[in-house]
Length: 403
Picture 1 (cartoon, rainbow, N blue to C red):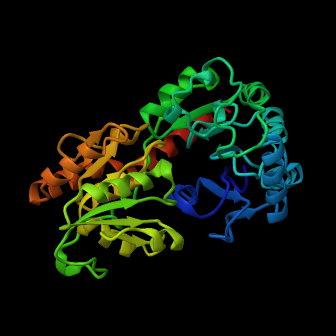
Picture 2: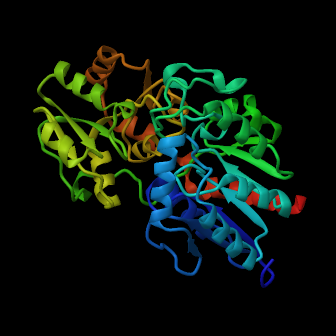
């Protein structure tokens, strides 16, 4: 403890994007008279100079990435950066560590987990994907691989992120299982029941696993009346919305192109998150918008959509679904990961992966009206971030009492 407060460190790859926002929202949610919360990361600008700690440097990240490319040993470099992080946490008298995404070319896992084991610190470990219990990949459902259950080997997607020309999936699996199951006080957290089931079946199942859904700020993501909208999309057409941090094939880029070919001309597809190059290549009838940091603009876009399409092939519990619902727009998602868990029959649709004809039929049949808007907004209330963060606060208290 420090000055009578429990000292908590969250460890994350970068300060920006969804996970970066989550860590800082959590930091601000806890009572300052009881908790001294910090966020540590390697990439991105300092968000909170008082509570943030940036360790390592871009050259270490670059070297880690190159070595991973050559050896397929993501997480086994950056020893100096990890030592720097550990020394700082020790200097602050850390009481609890909250782990987030461990891949991203920034941590030396044997050093970090050796220290956690030696210190016997309570650990809350948030699972953002499946990487922690596989020998290589972050998601395996798209290829139907089950090697993670007994031991990875001969990885069929070792050239996918974290991409490598080598295949060390068998050794990675053994080393990660040994490291990741060595700690005395761990609670695994997943944002979806889908990932919870996988975590419990994996070697991480030696620890308690609980599901805490992602949350959003319902004061920001909200339904707006037409006169309150500032950012206007083209008028006279029904907007079919897609959104991704990066529109790669696994996020449905090719499926939106296919959908455009079979939709009537009075429907406009809007894709938020496409690159400048992709915008130039988009066919007529698709409007591309690059990633925006203007949240109010994003809220306006959600509000104007006829239907939000999440044509993802790899996902956990996407907050985009929640944001769309909170703005009163129904969601259509592929049956992927935990994505269907956030919608009901009254608020959206679930379609098998790649069934574009079915997607088109639903888009054409869907009606957005006051009934659907109210149903979406009401359903979104359970994902209010204050409620969600209260669950984390209770978990922290339980973990610290164990110690």
